[in-house]
Image (cartoon, rainbow, N blue to C red):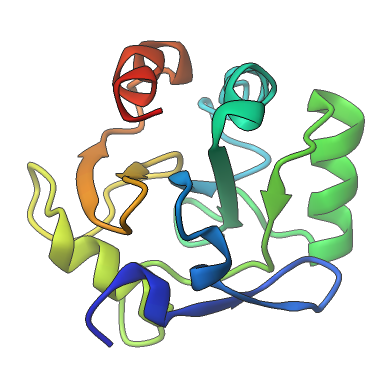
Length: 158
């Protein structure tokens, strides 16, 4: 698989989604966690989604429990947490691994396409990948980069 649109992922409800469904959209892919110091970023991500979804932005959240076991809940518990605490309406997918032998193939691709300062590995929760309307992975943003700081980059692509 050589491009973003070649991959699939499973939503929280079990529905398989083709990334090609997002063709023509600007996509922000984020590995999330419910019990992390960065968890309040859900609020900023949801604001980005509400502000720019009608203009072509999609946000895809992928829960991951690989960093200090900060998302140990079931998929149902994670989804409920995101909706009740942050009103998340952007698409959340089932929990995955982003590093290691069992890393999700989409994340292997993203890490190869946009290595970070520490190499290809995802360093922590809330690492963000920005993908343009043609499916090109443009850049990776570190966990500490707040969603609000991404707005200018997203606006350029919309």
